[in-house]
Amino acid sequence: MAPSRHDAVLDVRDCGGPRVRREKHGIRQVTVSWADPGARFTSLFEVLVIDWLREANVLAIARRLRLSWDQVARIQKRAVTRGLARRESRPPTRIGVDETSFQKRIEYESLYPRAMRG
Figure 1 (tube, rainbow, N blue to C red):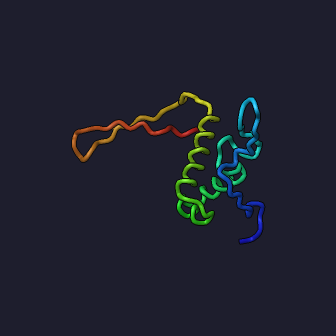
Figure 2: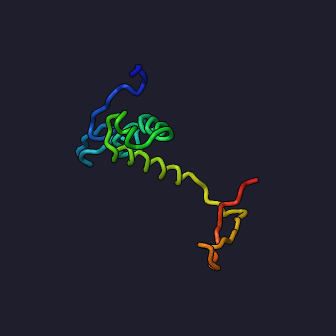
Figure 3: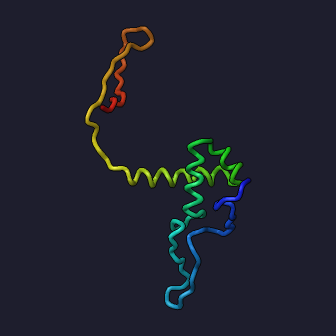
């Protein structure tokens, strides 16, 4: 594998940041810019995994990056959750309706496909 900025392996319990001990509050985790709170991987590494998921399946990526299937699936789930949170909710401006016969009988089924834009 060619050297890149992703070659470093950070083997820690989680990448959420270092912990500090305070007399009043006990042990607290410091927030860092390079990982989400409680994340096991850096944000940059998760971006790499998501980019690869566009090209291959979860198992192939897990093998390539030496992760478990569950770890890759959790990264994918977090990315989908972040994406859905950013999406603005808009009602559809148009819908399409079609009826078709079912099994060559006189039973009809209504279909509501997503209308084409434009």
